[in-house]
Image (cartoon, rainbow, N blue to C red):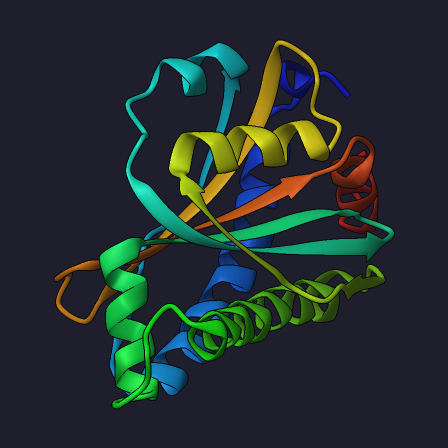
Length: 198
């Protein structure tokens, strides 16, 4: 599918699906951290890959990557700035060494729970079948992680689909993470078919 051919009605339908998934993920994050989480409206952008390359996204981050298999395969990527990841780990393991194996396992489990909540909400809403893989944790600059995930997903074309949701602490304080769903080719068509939009 050439993402530029998506109609405004199709984009609105996809935005609603991803909004439901993101709301479920935000609720799970709120329970895990025992604090109110504000969620932005999912932002669906059809952009040139080089636009990401041009962005100044070289901050150091911790990212959790979950592969989705089934009728709408792709990847869920939850990206935390390094200082945010540190505070999350400290809140759950007060006396632990933050970035040791246990700390990274904690972030991986958070990412797994959030991704599963997101995916299960979409499954319930659309009836589409999807299963999440074991999460992987990586530590790199934001730009490198994001671009490698797009490439891994098979989005090799000049134009790619970027679906991002921003999570913030209650009251819009600090950003608690960038959350991405990156579909593999054919996934959006399957979701739209389930919605009767193709």
